[in-house]
Image (cartoon, rainbow, N blue to C red; front, top):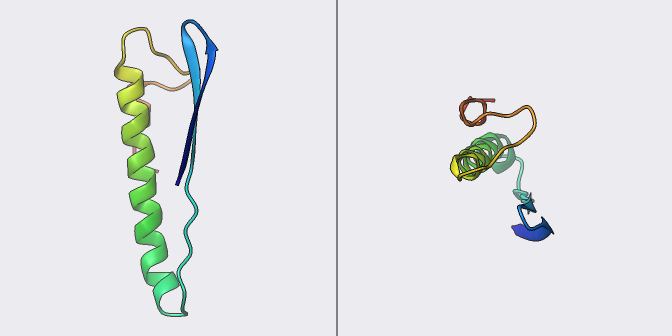
Length: 71
């Protein structure tokens, strides 16, 4: 997992989140892959909702309610 934060200006920052996963074996990949992907999506959605809840926070085209919707 990689998380990077870089300042944009006094009122903004950019957060990058990277997550790579791989499963070894013919049996584990189709079983664990979708479960892990769902967990990762839930983690990202929760992070976005929390970030949008901060005073003055915004993302163009994304509301806190949109961030909580299932993919």
